[in-house]
Image 1 (cartoon, one colour):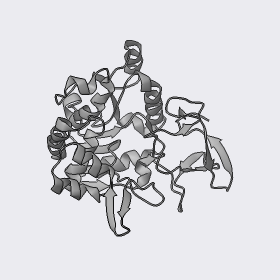
Image 2 (spheres, rainbow, N blue to C red):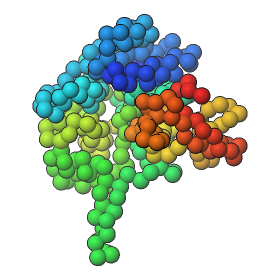
Image 3 (cartoon, rainbow, N blue to C red):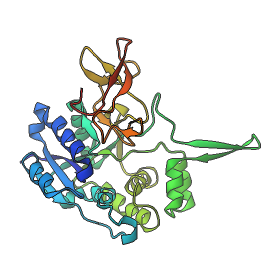
Length: 304
């Protein structure tokens, strides 16, 4: 049995993306040394049956922390905001876990290996949503031309969740951490700290985004041991589009040295004519190539 697992979650709406993530993993020969595990947050019986032929394990996601029913009515997919903080409970037989959101896919296996190295000795392997060319997540409003009111995703969410001012202010200037791809060892202390914070963020705040806020608090307030990885390890396309290397047929960073992107993440979607690429394979957008040309292309795995 493999000691490392790649874990993800999906509902029936995102099943096609889930299949593409699995196919992207299994397109690499090295994937035979990693087990793929799936949390079911609203898949159909036929979808689960199909999955069980392709992956190591499928488990039904639960509300591992009690959430008021009115917050999650008919939104089973929101279990992703809770269950990912309890992976050792669902899949206890592994030493290391790499979580990848189902709207992401693996473009380079070296990034998978990097994540499993990053979480050695209890560290959290993860990326920050900041870097050359990335869309700025904070906003500034000037009063009387002198006083700056700064609003950030972390600060806004923390205040709405009833997090005390001292912690909220610390988060306000911290680079946002995207929880869509991360790695942790089974016995890491980070799980406990994350779960503790998640109970707080769920108590008063919105369910969506609560687990991300909780991990940001764990890193910037509780000072859990963390190994920050480069942007190519979780390339969020809504922040900055990649370039395309036509010679190598792969997506690369848009700035020199144009390194190959390891994980393409379609978080927040890519929209054209009011259609989201995540839900429509026909959606293509204009990309620059390394050869100086422009092409229309999908960023989904296996779609030409």
